[in-house]
Image (cartoon, rainbow, N blue to C red; front, side, top):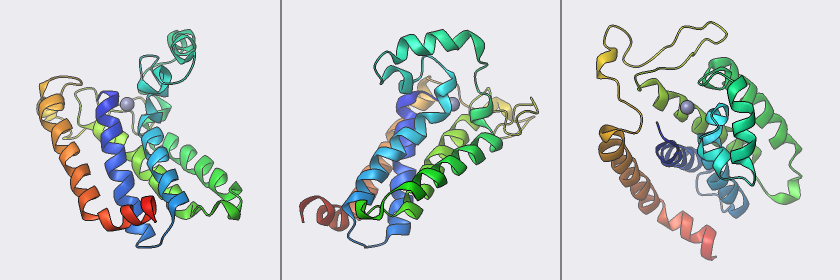
Length: 189
Ligand SMILES: [Zn+2]
């Protein structure tokens, strides 16, 4: 999937996780963190591609990505259970370092990070290439599994752009509408 699709899926999944876990607690700091973290975590697995949105969005990222690019195989550790566990451990560590006066609910942010990250892997699993889920074991896994891989989608083509992307956008808008009272309370209280 392309960066824009991963980002909108990650934000939708991340916000859903936030509302499921944070409930109706008035917590602007956690909400702001959830919005930022869900966007970043959704793009993080493609850190192994210099063309990814993550590299493009940081200063000198394009150049840095191009330097490391020849040395890294795409869809690698970052697209596996092992990579997810490492990201989870680092996120757990970082959230535990947050001083309590920030008012951020680290437990919620940890799960927003993980759900958004995993949404990227699932989205890549429904593409033709699949992902090396059990890295370092090199076999690629996808959904639906072989021999039904023929119905998987091609990254950046019409099905992603004209079906998945609009549907997820609508889902995100619906989530915002459903939870508008809580969002308004956080933003305008
Ligand atoms: Zn990816």
